[in-house]
Image (cartoon, one colour):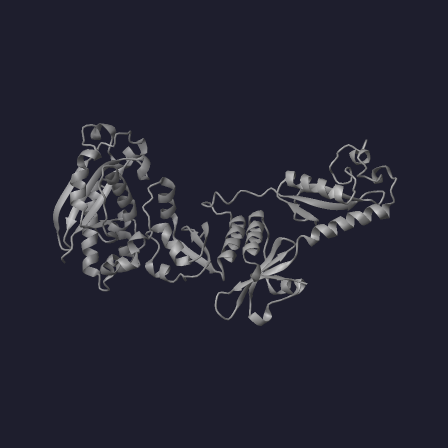
Length: 459
C-alpha cells in the first residue's frame, strides 16, 4: 500500500478536550503491512490527574512531573500525524483531543480518519463486543499495559493488520472515500444507516443503547442536518458524551419545514428527551373561563390553563389576560367584579366610572348582562378564525394540511388535492389531532401573515 497510517492512542485527565490535558501519547506509523516508525511519551498536562484516572491508567502526578508539556512535543506530534491517515479505536475521541491541543499551539491537522471500532463491525462481524479489550480477547490479541497509550496503540496495530488482511470488500478504501463522510460518524452509526435517511423535511430521533430516545430535532433536509451533528470536532464534554451515546437514528418525513417545526415541538414535550434541555421548559398558560353564579349572572375568571376544563380564550401571560380583560370590560360595559378584575365584592370600581351597570349589586337584569357577556365572547372568537394551511406534501400526489381552530393547532395530516376539506368538522375527521403550545401558535400566526395564499378559511 502506498499510504501510511498513524495508529494513535492517548491517555487524558478527562473525557473532553477543552478542559482536560493529555498525559501520554503513542503513535505507530504503519504501512499496511508493518510498523515502520513509532513515537511515545508521557506528557505533563499541567493539571492534577483525577484519582480514578490514576487508578485506571497507572499514570500519576509524580510520573508526569518531569515529562515534557504538550507545547514542547506538539511539533513532533504534528510531524508524525501530518499527511498520514489517523487511525484509532473510537477515532473521534483521540482526534478531537489531539487536534484541539495542536490548534492551541498553532498547528492545523487535516487528516483522514479511520475508526477501528467501525471497521471491525464491518470486516469482523458477529463478535460479542467491539470495545478494545473484549475485541482483542475474542481475536486472541495480547494487550500489554492495558489503558496505557503504547499498550493499547500496539494492540490496535495488530488489530488493524488483521482487518487489512480480512478486508475482502474494501471497507477501508470505502471509509477513506471523502464522499462517504464515514469518518465523522459516531462508532455505532453506519454509513448505510445514514444513507437510508431522505433529503426531505422532517423530525429525527437519536436513541441510546437501550433504544431510549435521547434527542429530537427537526430539519429542512434530514440527511444534511443529521450529518451536521457529526461533522465538527466540538471538544466540549456535552458534545463528546452525546456522540458516544448515539446508537440508532430514526425519523419521520414531513411535507414542509413548518410541519417539522410543529412536530419537533410536540415530540419534545411528549417524550421529554434528556438532551433537549432548552425546549423542555413547561409552558405557563392562562385561560378565560365562563361560569354562572347563584343568581344566574355569567361570570368570567382568569386562571391557569387546565386541559380538562373548557375555556373561552387563551393568554400567554397573566399580564396579557388582565390587559385584554380591562379592554373588553370597558368596551362591553361589564362588571369588574364579574370579570375577575376586582377581588373584593365591596364597592365595584365600574360603578364609579359608570362602566358597570349594577349587575354586581343586582340592579341590572340577568338577561341584559348575560347578553353582553355572550356578545363579548362572540366578538372575541371572531378574531380567532379557524383555517387550514395547505402546502406541499411528502410526495407530488398529496397535500399537507395543518388545522388551526380559533388560533390553536388542532391537527395535521395529508390528503389528496381533491380531498382538501373546507369544513371544520370534516377537517377534524381527516387529520390527526395534535396538542397546541404557545411556540406553535406563534409559528402558525407568523406563517399565515407571511404566506396568506396558503391559508384556507373553514366554514
